[in-house]
Length: 518
Image (cartoon, rainbow, N blue to C red):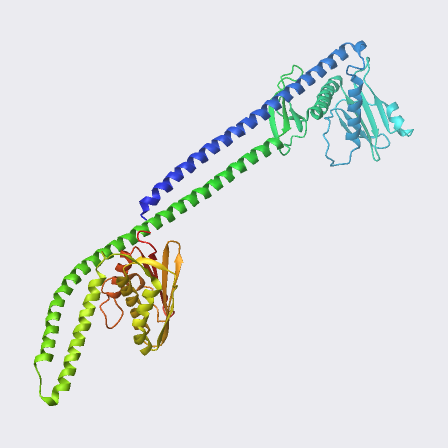
């Protein structure tokens, strides 16, 4: 098969595969964008809900601070946040060094030893002696003053094993912390209620205001301005779980890749099948071309042989008549009569043998002879009997195992010549000692005859040439027996195949239709 014949379907399938791949990747990209759009829409809705909750809580806080008399259980209580702030401050002062905890910035701190002597001071903080004496003269572990109407600052003192620590939060610092804890409370409560994985809040300078600042795994994040009058230029980033979306996208991608893989296998399989069919078709065409060329050569040879045979028969007949007259009308001396007759008989016998060969050759070219129903076994049996003496003299046994129940439409004498040529070929190939087994069997509308010999076999390189004119590996012979047999079988609508391996003998398989035209 030429490269061009394979290139076209290969190019066609490549274009088809490329179009499907491009379309699939576009669809995957569209699916990914749609999933991200859904996640973004969900995240924005959660962001807006959380931002509203923070804004409402800040408005309640402002309202409570301005009008404490309206506090009810349904409203926020400022003291709740102050207590949370004190708890965190206490935890910050008493935590072990190096522990992972978000610290509240402290601007007013005083550190003394266990006797009240100042060790370190930061900011403007005044601690009267009475508060220090509470630690020195008693078992107090903490000293605390919550904000009041007269003093809105917050004071806290803590007794540690090796020192005393005092801190003070101004009203402004306390207000900022209250705002932070309002946001923190809203973030924790609403984040849990809405199923948000993590929330980070950034201040106007883009520093982390609240949260861990670490991006969790398997989440989709969105960051937007908080748009709050209480937190100008602040932004918030929320992370929503996207495991389901990621799994959906992954399965879609895997399914598409598997589809492309199976499609590629299908294309490869289709190309292979097309290649095999094209190769088989090309081989059949090549074989048909060889058969036609062989048939043309055989026809030409037949015509030439027919003309030559007719020309040869005329002098043979004349020679035969002349020998008869010599034997009948001319006599030698009495002492040589017997020798004279013996020589004439030899010449006459050889003339008859040559005439028989010519007639058989003419018979092989008579493809127009009528077909008659004949027993295949009887034809094979006749040929085997004719060659029995020749084979036995060389120590070769011919075994006829053909089926006597098989009848075919054939030209009996021409078919005999086929089996005669094949058996003679096997006998001459073996030389001495061996066996030839002839068997037959039905195969649908055809009959098969197998001729197996125990000869030396045929070289692999010689197999394609054995049915060509004048090709022979023997010292004697013209290389016409097998080509003529091939032509006769083809005229019957059959075929000859040979199976052989050097050193393991040969098997000729003759396939013939049971009925003419089958």
